[in-house]
Figure (cartoon, rainbow, N blue to C red):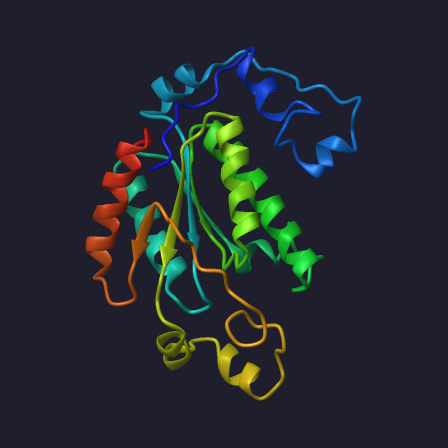
Length: 228
């Protein structure tokens, strides 16, 4: 389990994103003269105001595996308990922030990089970021984890391990049917590979009851140092 305490103000935020640091983003490396501006608040200030520190839960799995369903249920439960949480759904992000990206390996990597940076900012602000993204490549998921680790923020990889056969049976958006007809050549699981996590922090199976999955995720979040 990846555990951490939120990045503090003053010295900690520059360490998390300072240009030239190991793990710094490509964007930061292209801006060598930009210096992180530290605010006046510490993670402890935010945690006291919000009832707990932030964290990121990164839901990965095949299309139609149920990632967003589980993440949305967890979001509702957290907010119902008075904990700030926000669902960063991959489809929704492609309507705005990532709307200029396609589905090539390079664009998928950039899609994940941008999303990871947004999630890290949310977590640093004391919000539980719930990322629901196919995120097919292990290296890109590892980079997202390392960016949170650089900032001392909890990060949990949640693998929704619904099988390809079950995802195709569900196919709520008709994506698999279109892929099998050759209309979507890069659909993950059909025309593009999916690298399943070898050591996820949590695995949610396709047949696990939703309420049970949410309770397990809440426990794991608490153990990782996030709010519950």
